[in-house]
Image (tube, rainbow, N blue to C red; front, top):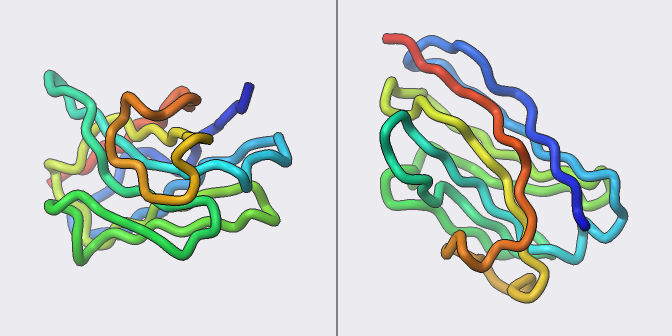
Length: 126
């Protein structure tokens, strides 16, 4: 079992940047592809960004391309999500997830992920 813990959420102003972190205590963290998802109020959870186990492949949801960066530090067992110029529609609960079997690629489909964090709330005020 891979335990994941997100941090970095909170109340932020529109236009401000934000960086979320997702950390695991398990050394096997580096063997997993990682993804960030979010769920806005009243909506289904959606893919935001993903990264493979080595960190040399990334992908983003179309609505996030150009203002979002996913990265990882396997020595620190941490994956990051940076968002520039936040918008009110970025409000939601942000989750990180880990997928072992798809670790060589970016995994977009949330059903393929094996482990999930509890989520961190991000609220963007206008």
